[in-house]
Image 1 (cartoon, helix red, strand yellow):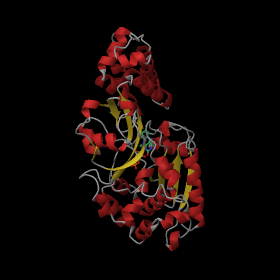
Image 2 (cartoon, protein in one colour):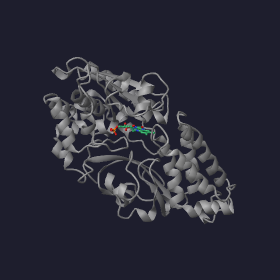
Image 3 (spheres, rainbow, N blue to C red):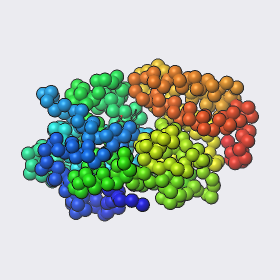
Image 4 (tube, rainbow, N blue to C red):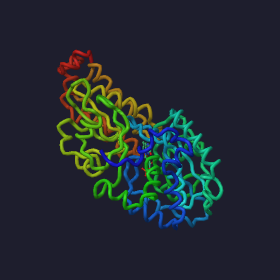
Amino acid sequence: MSKKILLKNVHNQGQATFDGYVNSGGLLGLKKALKKDPKEVIEEVKNSGLRGRGGAGFPTGVKWGFVPRDTGKPVYLICNADESEPGTFKDRVIMERDPFLMIEGMIIAAYALGSSLSFIYVRGEYSYPYIKTLEAIKEAYSKGMLGKNILGSNFSHEMVLHRGAGAYICGEETGLINSLEGKKGQPRIKPPFPAVKGLYGCPTCVNNVETLAVLPFIFSEGWEAYAALGTEKSKGTKLISASGHINKPGVYEIELGYPLKEFLEVECGGVWKGRKLKAVIPGGSSVPVLRADEIEKVNLDYESLRDAGTMLGSGGFIVLDETADMVEVARNLAHFYAHESCGQCTPCREGGHWVEKVFTRISKGRGVPGDMELVDSMCSQIAGHTICPFGDALVTPAQSLMKKFPEEFKDRILNGSKSTNPLNYELGH
Ligand SMILES: Cc1cc2nc3c(=O)[nH]c(=O)nc-3n(C[C@H](O)[C@H](O)[C@H](O)COP(=O)(O)O)c2cc1C
């Protein structure tokens, strides 16, 4: 399918131990990076074309360039391992099976940023990834990979592992920072951006696990090798967590630009039970849905998915077959967002529950004409009216599901639970 960078060694016996990691070529990138000037490290990351894998796809080297090193305050690096976007389960594979890859990447980033202390913020529900990462950090300290004079260099770095309490909003970088400081996990108004005023009021860089874990490759093989992969604007590979109505759910590494349909049919083994494809949500539940007829010429990269009216997001690839009840999908996702709102902004806190209530009544066959317009109007009062992009994340599935499958919503409103979709009717939806 394509070159493996992140998943190359995940099936190796002992890969999660220091010796296993070194035997498979680990630490080479760090050794090379430590010999360069930090500014050169940042330049090379810029040249590689690496873009943040947490969802927004912002160029990583550019982001590092925003972090001032001369304020007299410490610089902090945070690895965002909150991974709570529905349909996304890629970072956990690195944490469980190749945690030193993430640790090595973090040390490279910390060296470039001039940071002597970093944090890994792990999703509260991730017990096993937490344990494997903790074991790896302890071993890294005992082998001189962390602590004073790393691998005999002049660079020293400490790393702290922090486990969240299980809140989706703590994946948003400023919510995460507040949580790490021991406050409520509620996002901050930006600006100031974390690069300038982040953790404890100091310059802070927040990067996703996958973004950081690819750095060892960029420095062991050279940025040119990374930039040679992918498309003109979407460089490298991307982890995709595929779930839903497919034969082979799992985590895959694809070269960016890979055709979506081929990914679905070849890697995912096609739609299960011989059924037809109905829709795909390509980047986690917060991105717009694509109907089956819209995926023909779409590739898995930032630009192609944007041109198709959706996003690559976190790479959470959710497949829905012809039996999927889209009203129920909308209700289910609305329930998730209503539950996960941090409650700070009124439009999101109140609006999320109203959207869920209206979808619930439609799905139970108690909808009334005008309900779709009502949801739309509520969504327009939430999106763009909140401190963080959670409000936009909440309205995107609601509006896009109604826009792409209006007949299903109308049918449920007019005919109650007697859906005209024969498959849904048989299944008793
Ligand atoms: C509601 C919300 C949830 C988020 N959840 C995550 C998450 O679980 N993991 C993550 O890396 N980024 C998440 N992000 C994005 C982060 O705010 C941030 O942009 C990212 O960690 C930056 O890393 P990157 O530049 O490496 O992509 C979330 C953003 C929002 C608005």
